[in-house]
Image: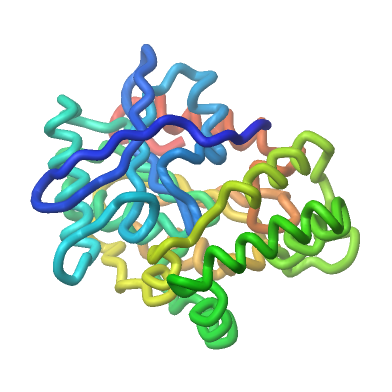
Length: 290
C-alpha cells in the first residue's frame, strides 16, 4: 500500500463549502466518507476499489480540509450538502456509501435520509450507535487535538516517527489495538508500515476531530439499504461492540470479522479475502446481501 495526498476540489453547494475528490473510472460510483484526522485527499483503504474499477467520490467531513458548514453543521445538513454535490456532479445513484471509522455516522445518516441515492452501505471499523469515545479518550482528545494545538500535536508525532522509527510507529499502532505486545502488531508487514508512516505523516485534525468526539445519534432503523460491516474484535480505536450493535440494529446487515490486530483492518493477511467479500457485496443484484 502507498498513501500520498491526491488533488481535491472545492464547491459551494446547498449553502455549504465542500472539499472533495472525484476519481472517475469505468464502474459505478462509491461515496467514501473517511474517518478521524482524514480529509478527501487521503485515499486510505481505496486500493481494492480502484483495482475493481469503481469511481470514488470522497468528500471531506465537516471541519476537515476545507469543508465548512454554516450553522450547527449537523449530520442532516452535511448529508443534504453531499446529496447536492452528487446532483451537481451528475451522480443520481451511488453503488454504496462507505463509512470508515469516524465516517460511520455520516454514512448511516446519508443512507437513512437519502435512500434514493444510496444503494448499499459498507461500514469499516466504523463508529455506530453506541456512546463513543470513552471519557478518557474524549477528554484527552479535546486537549491535544483542539484547533490551535492539533498542528503542534501532529508535528510532535511526525518528529517521534523520524527519531523513534519503527518503535514509535509500533507504539502508535498499539494505541488502536486491545491486543498487547507483539500481538498488537501481528500481520503488519513492511509495506503496511510504510503506508502507516505516510498516513501519520499526512494526517491533520483541523476542527473535525473535536466534532467527532461529540457524535450525533445515528438512526439505524431508518436505513433500508443492505449493509456490510467489517470490524476487528481487537479494535482499540472503535470497540468491536459498535460493529455488533450495527449488525443488530441495521435491518439488513451482515457482519464480517477481520483478523486484524487492531483498527487498521487493511493491515492484515485476511484483507484480500475481505476485499473480495466487499466486492461481491457491491456487485450482488439489488435486494441480495452477500
